[in-house]
Image (tube, rainbow, N blue to C red; front, side, top):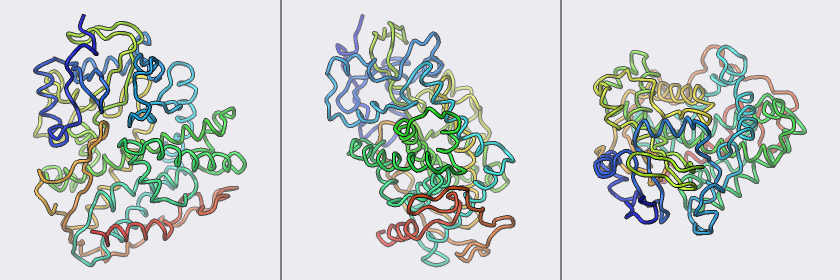
Amino acid sequence: MEGLISLPLESLLTEDYEADPALVHERLRARYGPVAPIDVLGVPVWFAIGYDEVLHIMQNPRDMWSKRVDHWRAYAEGRVPADWPLLALLQADNSGFHDGERHRALRGAWIAGLRPFQEPGSEQAQRLERAMVRHCDDLAGVLAEGGPSGQADLAAQYGRPFPLLVANHLLGVTIERGEEMVEDQWRLLNGPDSAGAYQRLHAALLELARVKRQRRGDDLPSYMIEAKPDLTDEELARELMMLSGFLDFTGSLICNVVFEAITNPRLRESVSIGAIEEVVNRVALTNPALANLTFRYARTEVKLGRFTIAPGDPVMLSIAGAHADPRFGGALARDSVRSTRAHLAWGAGPHRCPSQRLATQMSTIAVRRLLERFSTLKPTQPAERLPWRPSPFVRTLSALPVHYELSRSFSGTPRPEAGDEPAPPAPNDGAQDGATDGGDARPRSGILAFLRRLRGAQ
């Protein structure tokens, strides 16, 4: 039996992978099949790139797989360096890294907390949708401050900041140090300074949990407390840390959809005729923002492909690799906008994303609003020269510089839409400095100033 440690390892995070992961997946598949032994920042890991294998592990029949880091044999034996860049993320004590009853209880709090914002027609969902439109218009207004035409970075100035503003609405406050939180969210998933980023974010969210415990509002943490009253402030802060990953994923998805929409005339045409949700689904299939998932650890000996996975071995699941599997992707029409809903971009099984509807809604509104406001959005560099973000998990552009031209109907100061009145203040909310009326007011000047500084630095 060939063990993970005894095999020669393929380094994953290389220039080739950053430039074109599909070619790396193809090479690994040709050499090893649906599972390959790889090196991730100096640590040996199995890399699952077969659709059936990835789906099987996600569904986790008979609880054969765990997400708890203490099931990782090398970690338990002290063979993972304490300063390994991804360790802080994998050690996170929240529902994303729990199994069984503990995971089900915490996930239940998430589902209950998100329900008012994802339930079509609910007051909270309608208020959130209006807030999303306003946030998009505010960001577009800052982006277009250079005049009716100019240059901007749609990743740094639009795609990534937008989910932060939505998160402020969900959390019920506008958190001071907003730009620092954005940067810490990037650091947490990218690897560098992930431990420091985790500590800073955790401290801010712990304070927020204490505030919401005392003064409930019409917001996600208050609904989570209501659904699970025995949730401690510390537990709630750890759960809300997962919002960072949601923000990063959604911002990356928006950037990927925008990139495809402005470089693929067929997709842009589909957006114009109102099929934008199909475009989002198509991009989630062909260019998933969350390309790879954090590790699963085998609880028992498992046969995958031509290898035997030993108990305690880590397996990284590749959504992008699974989507490129000929057994799955070979049946898809590559020139069609419409695509299957059987893709794995939202996960499957016990850890399936509970906020799929919200992320899709955010992406469709952000892309639609952007394309309505600008008649021209053209990359300033050839597609092959655009920089991709180096990350073991996320696949998105680190910058999307474009030349823009405003639509004639958009002067740079968006007009209020019908029914776009500010929401009334939520009861007992706003206890923290920098709070707004339930997170639904226009962004504070600090975030807008941050975006203007980004523009000035280009």
